[in-house]
Length: 149
Image (cartoon, rainbow, N blue to C red; front, side, top):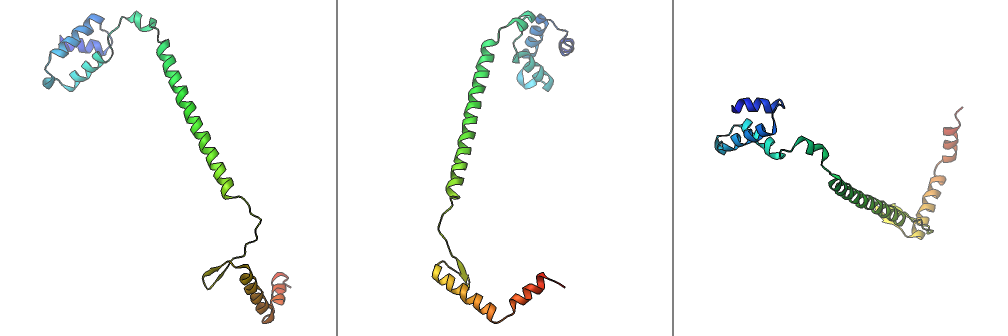
């Protein structure tokens, strides 16, 4: 009889009374002797309490629906506020880090050492440029490079 009820249940042909009978039969089996199929069927039968079919479609779930929608709106609002706060933080940090300054800064690396003294950097630059033009024909070479004949 148990297997016949199982087959009817799986085919969706059982009545409410037959489902109660099948549930009682499965619960009567000691837990250590239940097969995987018995456990799965028992879970299906007890997970959702049997209802009269008319109750399934006439039950009013408005309150639960409103609660779920309200909770979701609340989570979405907080998520959006978090995103907005993150964007504001990134933008303000960007402005703080990239604020232009009106200072002229002169930096040179001399033998791998950073020199930021403006006077020393300008002196080194003038010396290098003077040496470059005094000991070479740079102007002529640049002219030949950019004006090939």
